[in-house]
Image (tube, rainbow, N blue to C red; front, side, top):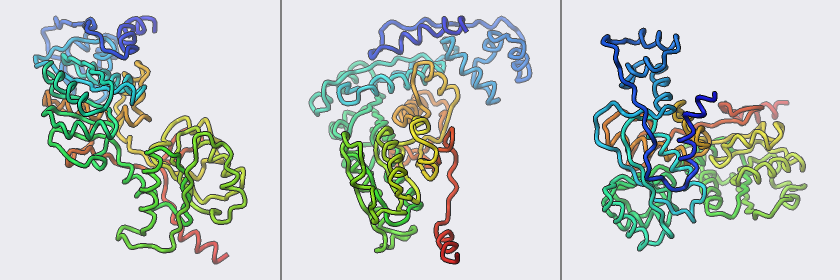
Length: 417
């Protein structure tokens, strides 16, 4: 363990800075002095005998055996091995509005860095700070990026900044991990969008809802947008877009300071046995769920989009409060090597969707630059990454697959009784 921490120390120090150092991290190179070829069985023998450097000396290319290749990738990352491949340098720029995105200036950079050090190629990663997302400022920095020889940019911007990048159309390839194509008015062939589709999540969740639909949202732009998507989806039944006049929707927009929901929940006959949608940050969501139980609302189920796919939900709520909860999730592909490499840097790509979509973006750019196979199978359509959506339930200790319940059958059984 001490040896591992010693090897990781340069990477951990590197990761703590918001700015990327110009001093390259020392590389380790392993020379293969064995004149004989080494097949899969031979590689496995080296591993079984603890001869990791002999294994790595022969494993200079991606291995067909997935288990062996995972060991190879992880050790390349941990030991910071220099590339044995002759290829042009991968150059990636980060366009970062620090004042707007806060911690994501650091975490998205770490996500990109974690990916690049696992691929074994020479790379240059440079961050460009912008003071604002105004068009003039973005134009100035994009021109500097081009002047420095970077043509692939990962930009975790807000909608305003992304729209300005598209309007400028500086002819550099830009990936927005924070923006969905539906959020932008004018398009550009140089732009790729990576954000998850909240509207698609809402459409899927509403198939599990019954009337009345009670929506709790905060007053943020995201909260209001989610409430709109959910209310619109709930107006219709099935997939034929037939208006259902019997579907009742009630919306409550609560402020950050609100902690007591008695006025909304206590003895409110309009919401009893309804489906509740929670579009609030995790702490507020836990508070709402506990008070649904406290005021004996008898909710049929509790629904939420990606905003509450968070392990904190499991520790901050009682199981009885969340047992009927359904959460939509678009983080469906996992790569053990990248997950662990990010974890070493204190980064999360398992539950944090922005870090995850950033990883999808650098994986796509790396494929474009090197021609190497992508690590993730997320498809790209009309310049938008398309993520599968799964419905999960927060069980006692983890999120598990949700099994659809036919509510009409339950109602028929209650009628017969």
